[in-house]
Length: 261
Image (cartoon, rainbow, N blue to C red; front, top):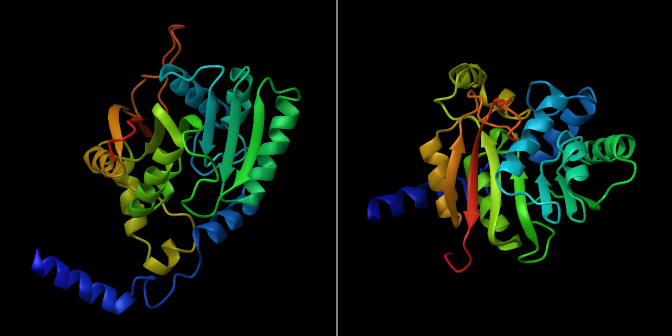
């Protein structure tokens, strides 16, 4: 234990509690704003059929207990891939789209106005640039973060998860997707990232690979109870109509138990 403390002291001595001695070229905020401005409107961070993925994401939320009267937070809502499907399903509930990019938020609002001109639920949009959710304690039934932790350092994923446990009601859910190394194609993603020098990697959104065991422990550390995983390359998401689809990224379902942290 003393050796660990000495190592940490040396690390902090080089970089300090505020971060490394040489600051990164760009922050998450700058990276994603630049990315949002450069990409076509029918795309988001990630790959795959834009509209179909939004429908699969909603199917997963419904399978995990999303009700019409619930308040859903779409953390990392992008330009509305899930929003146009989730908002019509929340009859009498609330949808809150949160993103770090103002350009993405504007795109999402435009897409929703076109696709859902008369929303059956309350709709709000929030720009969030820190791990602090601009929401009241115990005010949300479910938070989803699709293709968010796939582009975020593990330590920051932990910070957002820990903060999210404050705003989710007892028994509420947090559902996130990620790229574990047992998922088909993830080794290629890792090797592609490894082939790029540090400076270049941090001048565009990162592609973060991980493992199920690691993200499970991160979630537990943040105060959540992991319930189950949906492997991203298996057809395991659907609403009982006989057609099951895969999301592409693996998804983890967490439940918050108040008083356990």
